[in-house]
Amino acid sequence: MSRVYNFSAGPAAVPIEVLQQAQSEMLDWKGSGMSVMEMSHRGKDFISIAEKAEADVRELMAIPDNYKVMFLQGGATTQFSMVPMNLLQGKTKACYVNTGAWSKKAIKEAKIHCDVQLSASSEDDNFTSIPAVDSWDIDSDAAYLHYTSNETIGGVEFQDVPDVGGLDLVADMSSNILSRAVDVSKFGVIYAGGQKNMGPSGIALTIVRDDLIGNVKAGSPTMMDYKNHADAGSMFNTPATYSWYLMGLVFEWIKENGGVAGIEARNVRKAEKLYAAIDGSDFYANPVQISSRSRMNIPFTLANSELEGAFLADSKAAGLVTLKGHRSVGGMRASVYNAMPEEGVDALISMMAEFERTKA
Ligand SMILES: Cc1ncc(COP(=O)(O)O)c(C=O)c1O
Image 1 (cartoon, rainbow, N blue to C red):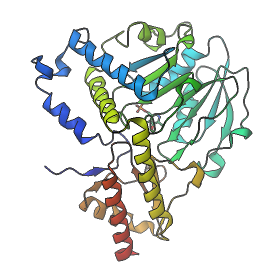
Image 2 (image 1 turned 90 degrees about the vertical axis):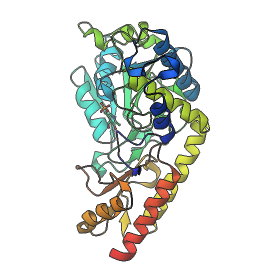
Image 3 (image 1 turned 135 degrees about the vertical axis):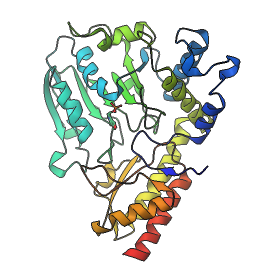
Image 4 (image 1 turned 30 degrees about the vertical axis):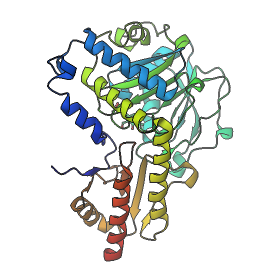
């Protein structure tokens, strides 16, 4: 068996220890005689898996008791709709910050349900920065303010939670959840698809403050109402059981690796050395303003774009895969989520230096 270093933006690398544990438990989960994917979600074995996953993520993120933690289907994209449907609560306006491709998708979906006030946008600088919070145009009558804490495609990340006065803050943390410490009590809603920092796709972790639940827009489908999922412990319908189980294994792995603080320290080291390699060369470049750079998704271009094919071929030969940038921005992108070991980043940096030495 030969494993590669997978720099994919998502679905993305999963810690090897998690995969090995899932493998060892595949046919017979802890003496149950069956795989987790064969279990009833109502049986005591799966309930214990589900409850442990929730308890672990509550501990890891220090989620206060007045928040519900839900394991929902439909990916982060479904949250683009569920957020306005549940949080408008009779209001007609919501504030959105546009920092890139994922913000834009959230905004487009919100416009189906309400007026969107664009509080800030970095579109004019081609999404290479986070607009200064004191310049944001915030309407205190809006139901909430939504932002994307890490733009997976542009590689732009908020370094702090913005202070938006009294408005409920909603964050799409799909591509940086559990990679750095955040104070959950500052948010109304946090949501994230699983397939970057929490394991497999098919499940979205959704954390909602209690008082925002129970007032869904009239006429909404039952599956879009947070209350139905919250009341049923995320088992209103059959949940994505295997994805939930794997997510739980990832939470255990984070706990064993120093919790969010330990993982964050490693993420800082990984990102710093990769940016240093890019900035220290005239051959590679990253367009993002230094203070807005993502620790998770690091796009970079080559001085000569005609060498991109050769770069991808050489990197693949070195066991470093999925480095091609998103089709909308081109170039390269290294996604270095929690599961990417430091050795993977070191290997990429060495390969980049060698490529520059021989091809520049
Ligand atoms: C920041 C961000 N938001 C939302 C999504 C959409 O997630 P999903 O495909 O789970 O609906 C993605 C997926 O890549 C993302 O990176």
